[in-house]
Image (cartoon, rainbow, N blue to C red; front, side):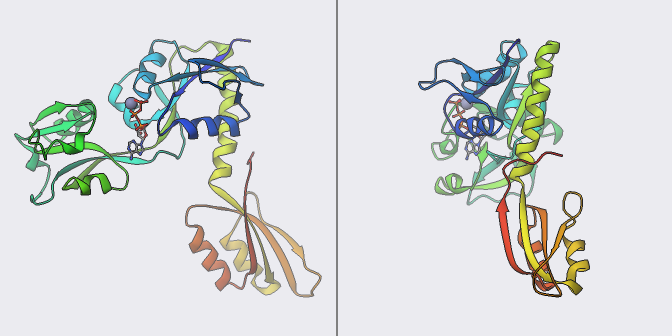
Length: 285
Ligand code: ATP
Ligand code: ZN
């Protein structure tokens, strides 16, 4: 069978999580010393280790079939590749920042200014959309020091916590895009490769769902069951088992990680006791 070739980052912020995701999908890689190309065990794939910036080009050229990388890089490279799944890690935003002591009233602040960035394409598009003319100065690293050395009046860069900006005397003034790791694919995969990809996506879906949901077990007096079922409808509907003690039941269900604590509060208010929350390994519908 033809192998699906998956490009992932060789070393960097995405590497471990990309490998972890593939592993959770049942794909382990027989590669201790990280050669460029390694066969996957027990699944028809090969893993190609690259710099994240090179991944879009390799996929567009058909050298790799799919890849895992930051959405920011996908957009910046502008290659003909499509996002097929959002992966929920390496979250960050692409923002404009200016010296802390400057006043920012809107994007017009940037008119005529020089802006340092490693993402000229995304920035240019944003400036065009806002009818701002500015001088984009492309640099590959340490963008955040550009204003303090007099290279530029503003920067456009990746921000996750904002502490790097802060320690360089900058403040974030506009978020241009949000980014997370995504899986991308090229066009023109063979039918056989598409079949392998379908299988991979099925697994990926099960893994992603499991990661964003929790299994809950709780005890409740029978009179509060209606309210509890309203709060946690579950995949189909919750499992309800009577306890040995008359008038009490155990409820088992699945809840989303999103708004998790609010749901727990609601459940307790409704009369739930002895709550257990358990991670889910895989979730298949
Ligand atoms: P490479 O050597 O492969 O070119 P890199 O230095 O360009 O690596 P990393 O710093 O490993 O890239 O970041 C990879 C991706 O992780 C970024 O493109 C972005 O999508 C995401 N990311 C999330 N948070 C951050 C952050 N705080 N700083 C940089 N990148 C981040
Ligand atoms: Zn890179």
